[in-house]
Length: 111
Length: 113
Image 1 (cartoon, helix red, strand yellow):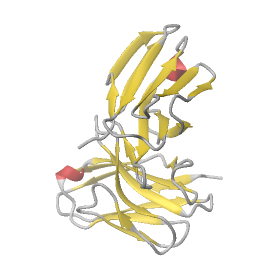
Image 2: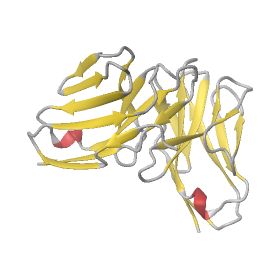
Image 3: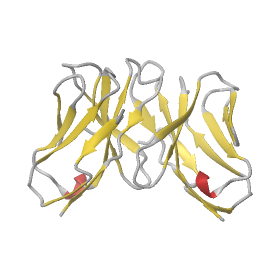
């Protein structure tokens, strides 16, 4: 059973548009990470959020962690073709050290 | 620094054949991991090694074995490959706590016919 649900599964937008992807769980996250994966490569960590309600910004990317630590979102402002990739959320169970990944959202930004 | 390297990059096997996927890291990390990635499933942990000399099962260990040869190298072996093991395999490493950041290799694309 997959613990992390990501939505949508696929998103295609034009350059300059905004987009938001979501990561949800019925369980509380102890912390949550967002990764981006480009074709033919391994995932690369973008951010780790730990505190409920936390907001982190990385240039045009804004990451939010829900107050109850059961959900997170990634918002990209003015998307560029270089933002194209697979976005994965991943979390740890409260007392564990094993990372569980969501199914991913594939983002395509067309020029 | 090369980071995490994996060999081979591509492999085709017949059902029942065996093979070993190799992984090495040059970042002096203590912990290493093997994942498989299937469409729509994200990455699933097969095995991990918290430190040299230790290994532990992840979410989907059946059909696989691992060896932590030394601090740098962590190999994944398929003793008798099955079509269900067709996947992309990623090796990763991290400092003592995987909660900080895991660094991933480029992956091995395996097809079992």
